[in-house]
Length: 212
Ligand SMILES: N[C@@H](CCC(=O)N[C@@H](CS)C(=O)NCC(=O)O)C(=O)O
Image (cartoon, rainbow, N blue to C red):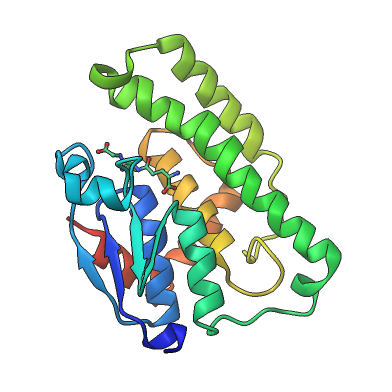
């Protein structure tokens, strides 16, 4: 059976990380089913779910016999399995591949894990992770310092990697939207970029599938 023929099931809705997967599937135009479980509902802690993902986190993708966690790994697997999105010539070069890893690490580590997720934990979920105004204010300042390094200084927005839409645009846009939601004011060039990306039907359809 080909990768395209295997049944696809996504566990999880309602979070920034589940949105990555629903949005990417919408961009690929792939048919799939959803188990609409949410975070901190107890649904990630059942024995059935824990056997799929011992980390007890959403999202999880079940694709045939493959059970995969980590939203970025899921997007990369889907891109390889469904050959829908195009690559440009630059993206296949050694420099293009290095830039891919650089942007992905930046979005996942500098913008998400060390900044936005710190704010989420210590401002948004103090009952679980403890309140810390010092950690939150330093994470906010760090985020602002980091986004200044994104070179997108033209009036016309462009994709973050090469000349085609990719999963890296999903990582970046969701981080920028998340920052806006926690009251961080973005520079104008990034506001323009987000508005442009939000016009994609894939974004709208993915957000609808991700809603609780
Ligand atoms: N690195 C993981 C993070 C997943 C994650 O932290 N998920 C949160 C929601 S955004 C979660 O499932 N929390 C479980 C819970 O709180 O019940 C990914 O990108 O998939």
